[in-house]
Amino acid sequence: MDNEDVAKVLDEIADMLDVAGDNVFRVRAYRNAAQSIRDQAVPVADLTQEQIDAIPGIGADLAVKIRTIVETGDHPMRRELEAKFPPQLLELRKIPGLGPKRLKLLIDRLNIRSREDLEKAVNSARLSEITGLGPKLEQRIRESLQHREAGAGDRIRYADAARIAAQLTAYMRKCAAIGNLEVAGSFRRRRETVGDLDIVISAVDSAAVMKHFVAYNGVSQVAESGETKASVLLKDRLQVDLRAVPPKSFGAALMYFTGSKAHNLHLRRIAQGRGLLLNEYGLFRGSSAIAGRSEEEIYRALKLSLIPPELREDRGEIEASAAGKLPKLIERKNLRGDLHTHSLYTDGRASIEEMARQARDNGLEYIAITDHSRRLAMARGLDPDRLREQRREIDRIRKRLSGITLLQGIEVDILDDGNLDLPADSLGELDWVVASVHYNLEQSSAEMTRRIVKAIRNPNVDVIGHPSDRLLGRREPIKFDFGEILNVAREEGCALEVNSQPERLDLTDTACIAAKRAGVKVVISSDAHSTRDLDLLEYGINQARRGWIEKDDVLNTRPLKNLRPRR
Image (cartoon, rainbow, N blue to C red):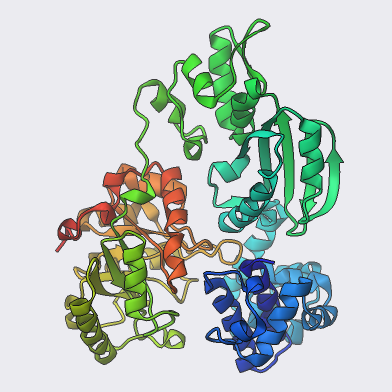
């Protein structure tokens, strides 16, 4: 098992203990252990029990359990807890707005045991009978149920799919019969969620490749296995389809299975207009293939430049390609700094100096430590006194740390009325201010718009953090007038964040497009809570690329001296 697999088992134990009403400190111990495992730079499967015990946040008892999980893939405690709950009940944890505590309320007060029970309770407005569960939450849950019914609940986060794909492709490349190999589909287009994996290969002996594929130890079920195509279900519950083609057709097959469907249909119409036929085997004039070995070859034959996979959604990329106006998309190497990170001062898991040293080792020129403000009491948010204490520590670190500039910032809460959680004199002393909404997410669109607009107009605010506050698969985005937000942000010179956390990826790709068109700058940030989290910037880059974002659209591609245009 890899670290993520182990952490998921611990998270499930924590969730079920929480639903069962177990001791809050015991629940927190399992959650902290899960996060500590995720933060490890080496696989815990390679560590001894004593080494696991030495990981911060993990004691002797948990180390034994983790070793069992590594060796067996599960733990008896998780199975025992699971047996106490109907499977349909545990599935409700995936519904945005229903965390373990609220789910326990529904079990205790309304005897909810399944999705059907929840639907009946929502339709009869019974949730509002429970203190703390009002009509706004009831409406959010109703929308979530309808959303999942439409089939949107079966996808996994891109970051999870990337981990699975990396393990599988590393195994597949051990097969000597494989020539080219690419993961296609929505994964290659860097969609924020992925429904399945499509792998395209070229091979001299496709039968040998298929045999190798279905023998992968991560496979739980083989749905189909032929000479050129196989389909399996992984133990992670993700379907993977493998297709083998001859080398002369590899580019055509890769283009076809990358999609999107709308992009491919548009290309086919262009081909038809030129008297050609485009399919997964190549580009043909009559029975003669004129292109197909590579994607670039096919685009060139259609009088187009190569279109990056992230743009292939039929949103104008084909017209831009034909006119020679495709954007030069942002790349990870363009980022000079990370402007949203956390430390041990609040809910981070590394010291300020550790975060700064890792950012320097990652090739960054500057990093802002932006711990939470005091409103987030659970995160031990900073008041003005602790903020000054942190400034003194940052000054000390600056004197001994070379190769990177360390900035003091804050992630300040935007209060209900749009005021900020810290006084203006405290904020005015900082190098960088991220303003974010973290609570009272059920405000109306008009209320939320006024709230965020007031924060944008505050001269101390540099960027609005994770603007929609969504959590993929868990929490719907807050409602506000995005057009108004963009207009005010442009007027005030305030940026919007592309948050790289895999469960956020906020701004969305379409919001990035809108921001670019409106002339609003973005900041791509990791929102790192550990040194390993600093690597999450790649996911924000993916999101920005899907949103047509270029280097000049991003503030933290600039040298530090040019970073803050509004001050």
